[in-house]
Length: 202
Image (cartoon, rainbow, N blue to C red; front, side):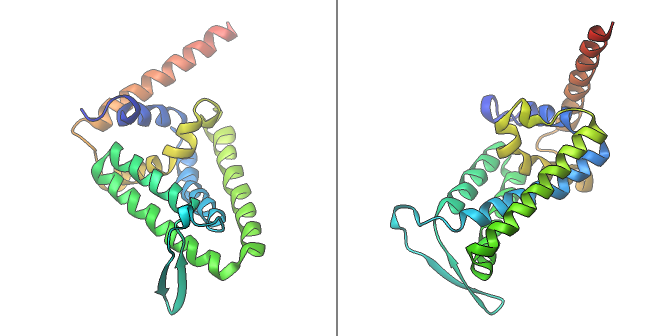
């Protein structure tokens, strides 16, 4: 049945799914969630090295990349560990994507410099967050999950959109019967919310 408590994937994914049942809103989140994570790492790439750890120099596409073990690395590491704990298979893919984002953001940070990077980050964050709020307000017609669960919104969202994509494209399930149980919980939560709304109106 998988993990329980903090790492109860079934419970957390059902909570997420109850806020993301509209196909357009789902598509908007798939488009914007990972760019939010990437640009957050981009601005964190300008923080100093943690505990004076040595830098790593790489060459990508003919350009030098300096990897600094700073807060950007720490955030990518924390996210990666959480995702692997949720589900070893999909979590490992998510952890790999986190690592790719960290390396790519380090590369972009070196190209742009701080004076331009913070502007790129600001615009990207505004566009992506605005898109998600539109997705919830116009299509989902429900306030986003961050108003009820900040951990859900900032830590788990990148993994959940990836898991959603894996389910849609490859019918991936962390364990047998996962999707059916999650859909049942989502349906029950949505019905309960609609009943409460109906009672308030009557």
